[in-house]
Figure 1 (cartoon, rainbow, N blue to C red):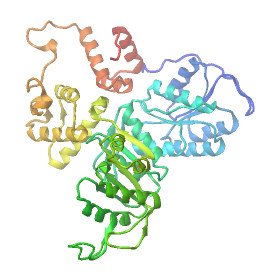
Figure 2 (cartoon, one colour; figure 1 turned 120 degrees about the horizontal axis):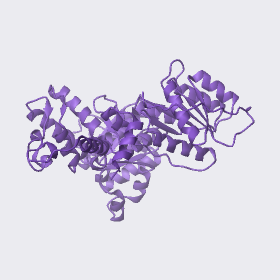
Figure 3 (tube, rainbow, N blue to C red; figure 1 turned 30 degrees about the vertical axis):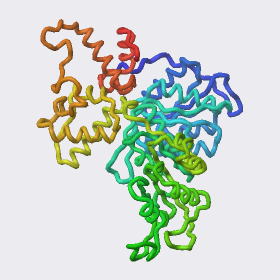
Figure 4 (cartoon, rainbow, N blue to C red; figure 1 turned 120 degrees about the vertical axis):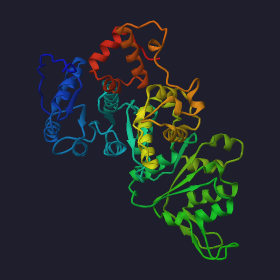
Length: 479
């Protein structure tokens, strides 16, 4: 086991609750003694006073008896878990910042941690740089400064309400989206989700609803560009019998049916001026009238909108009401395009292929390295939706168990349709030394993971210290 270097223990000065050491005091709680020891050695070398605890009960006893500047705790521990510990700490020491860490990298853990009062969330395997940054922010908050929490390069899986369309993020931009979901779900403010077509805006809306206090209430979606104005008005507000030709019976609109749930307005930029005015009244007065009726109905629905258009530009051009624009964007979330999420590809492709196997009854086992290179090099103007379509076609075309370059569409393949072998392995190429092959492979894995050292270590099967030594040996640097 070469991932922990053991140094002689350092005697820690003790003090009562009223004393404060000049060095920051941090409590680290994890049932894994190796993790506690590794983090203790790392932060002692940085001049911190470190206390460790192996379970929540021991940690809480320490918090009640000693002063600390921050607490770092695992979530999953035998007995009381880290989330329960965090709530008890928040009740006993409201100003003591808590950072949670866990190997369970999903949206539910993030939401529970952030809503429970955590100042940050660090997935395992721990990227020590991410934890350092989280602690720096915690110290800034502790000292009265302000800091904006940013996401590290981590993988999180979002399972939507229907349980069939996981949303994957292994990039800082996607991690930030997950944290924004956790934050905005705590209120009922209107949310505007902006992003290119195919980036998963409806999945984000469903995740906000699922994480909210009204998750048991309905979630309904309306595509504002799919219906002509009269039908859209009836779809949203409902109508009474005889309101127009063909209205042979009364119809409840989705605003009424959703109750105190969430109404998702997709492609909201396409609303006509008349519909913009009617939606503005709903948002301002929380009331509306069905088509053909003089009755005024109240609504407690939460409104989440989405658009791939530049709404600010449409406001400037007079094509979208400025007052409605500001009503819609009380909170905003921007979904990043796939071309800015290269680090997401391995897990994203994996999840899409699993779903394709289930839906198309295929038995695809994976994708070759060369084919993955082509996927990562492509611009993806259609984003995740286009990627899923490409993988679906490739799964049908592929005769073997692994998707190859030949099964990809021409626009994704680029030059040639067969898997390319590494340059050193092609006929006529000069052979490479073992050292050079190792250097190229490590560089490729680091680039593949967006220089996320934790993921690179998993792929290479080596420890973080060894990876760091190889990086220094070969002089590798991120682009």
